[in-house]
Length: 244
Image 1 (cartoon, rainbow, N blue to C red):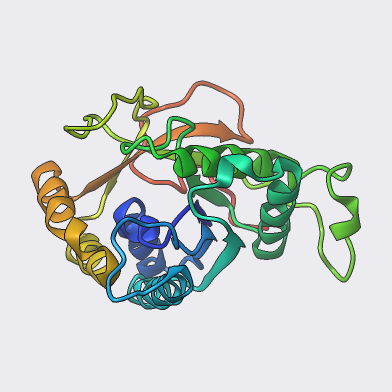
Image 2: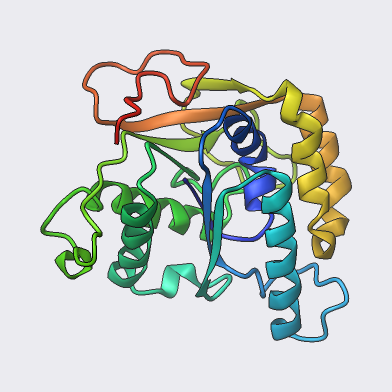
C-alpha cells in the first residue's frame, strides 16, 4: 500500500516500485488524500471542481498503467492537510489498512519528500500513525465489525533520495536503507507521470531529473515488526512473511 497526498505522487515518487511489485504478482493499493484541486498548474480547468475531476481521471489512468490493484482518492482539501483533524484522517487511513491488509506500507518522510511539500509531510504523519494504530485493538475499535480486523503491517518505508532539488528550500532526508532497481519499469514510471496532463508544465523537469538519477527508487525503512538494526536492502519485501 502507498499513501500519497496528490494525484501524480503515485507515479513521480513510487511508480517504479508499484509497477515492479505488481509485475512480481503482488497486489498493490494507492490511497491519495486529496484530488489536487489547489494545484498551480490547472490544464483546461476553469475552477477547482473541474480541476479535481480532471486530476481524479488522470490518477485513475496512471494507476491503471502502473497496474495498481486498488486505488482511491479521499476528499481532504489540497494544500490544507495541516488544518485537518488528525484523529479523523488517521481513522480513515487505519480503516483502509485494515481493509487491504498490506505487508508493506510506502509513504513520504516527515520532511515532505524531496520537494518538502507541506501536504507530503502531513501525509507522512497521518500514514505513520495509521501504520502503528491499525494493529491495535484500542484504536478505532468501532471499525472492528463485519469481518474487519486489526492488521499489523510488517514494514513502513519513507521515500527518500541522495540529492536535493535546486531552487527549493533545503530538506533533511532520511538516510537511504533500500535501493530498488526499476530498470524494467523506468519508462512506465515516466509515462505514468505524463498521464497527468494538467501537470504537463512539470513533466520536462521531472523527466530530466529522474533520467539524470537513473532507474532506481530509494527508501528509508522507518519501522519493522522485526527487531534489529536496519540492513541495506534491494527488496521491499526482504524478510516479509507472506502468510497474512
